[in-house]
Length: 167
Image (spheres, rainbow, N blue to C red):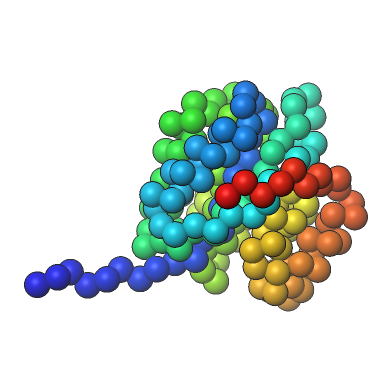
């Protein structure tokens, strides 16, 4: 007797790196995410750091993962991926080899002390919204506006440089 199929979930993951061979860190993340489910990737963008400014620029992208993992399982998997990429958490918003954040999980709203979905700061960050708009432009976001409109508005405030599509 076979076990029942697990429900698949649509998860959008923000991925960024600003230390070392940044594109290789992004590739490591994409490879690891492909072990969790089927993936589609946005282009890669380069942006200045937000918050703590005394650090190198970031490469950022968004990966859509169709996975059977629960939201909490996905968070644990992303933290494991960051650890395997030798991420060090010295300075809040500081430099890192790899940063992986759950941006959206299905249409769910999740609120724990250290885990909130939709990601609470994504709506004001062009480095998240611009690549997210490539993957799900019509999806509704903050204030009921679609992601592409929110991305365009944020893009006018923050510089986001298209690097290319690698995956």
